[in-house]
Image (cartoon, rainbow, N blue to C red; front, side):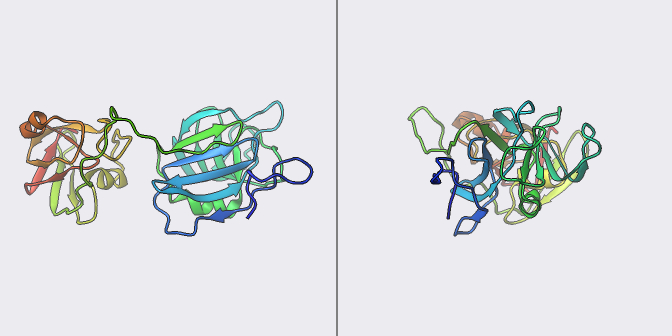
Length: 250
């Protein structure tokens, strides 16, 4: 298999071919676009899972480098900037026109700034990614690396997925049953509830939510033992429930 890291005889990076890791793929948590190699690589928590060639912005309409997040998804999007151009399976990265989407790939940078992916590849990835997934656009080839430090939080336990309880959102009055195999955050997200979250491991504190009633089953590494014992807040990305119902201030 040739990738953007290989070098052809003419000194240019060899063309990337579409590929899938030879293992079961988890949920994509990040994508990295290399402008130099004209490729995108999607990663789950274990490593790369999907790779494909892309076409980024042409001269004068360069694709911006930076760290982005998927803001919006539309399977049948049409551009409001460029003559109603079809942008199938669009995953928006900015509100001024930069997105991942299916499109023609001539073998070089040719877009108006978006990142074009193969049509079928874009369709395959569309239902696998979530709003909020990180997308890194880099001038050169980059890849995630493992690192550790004593000062970093690490998960104390696996997320609670035993289910069998109800979550009530006090502000809206909506109720959701949490079945076995699902996390609170997962159920709320799939129901379209606007939830702040980041790590999904209970180590960042982004999803902390006030508890009105019920007994959480804490699995996070952020709250102290005293805070967990108070049962007045919970990290919904990883917590379960020891009572039949958990009422949250949402």
